[in-house]
Image 1 (cartoon, rainbow, N blue to C red):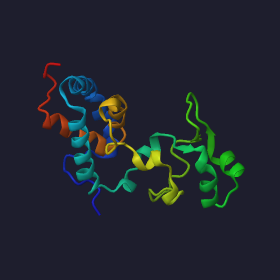
Image 2 (cartoon, rainbow, N blue to C red; image 1 turned 30 degrees about the vertical axis):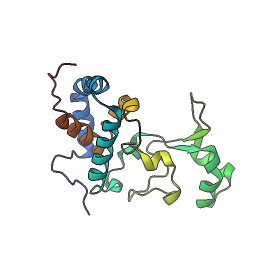
Image 3 (tube, rainbow, N blue to C red; image 1 turned 60 degrees about the vertical axis):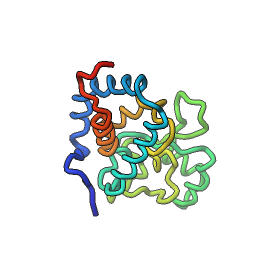
Length: 181
């Protein structure tokens, strides 16, 4: 099974260093994209790169996302998730969840990092019932990438595929650290 499809794909432990090193250039690239790129074209490029890179990437061998973020469980999924683990809703909320701060979203947040549902083998204790927010991370196949470039840039320090996508986009657009904004 492939873990690092590309010889250019960084190992998860190296991401924070390289993301920090590229932070200013990536922020300039974000600005450049907003000025010079068609949002629909950008979405198409994100989707193509997402499909290409995730096709050969075994996320269960990394799971940086599960190690560096708290999960979000929508209120309407708590009963189902509790049942998957053989718990009552109250037991599930008490053991695993806290109220999600500073949001109008009807959801809970997992209590701990790494996520309490992350298993040693890289699988999720909730299995197929893990939240959509976890399934979709780093959201590179979702529409409106232009509107979420800043949050996407944050994910380049966590997800090797996200990092690789931004590096490939810079090459495709011919962007360098000296490209004028």
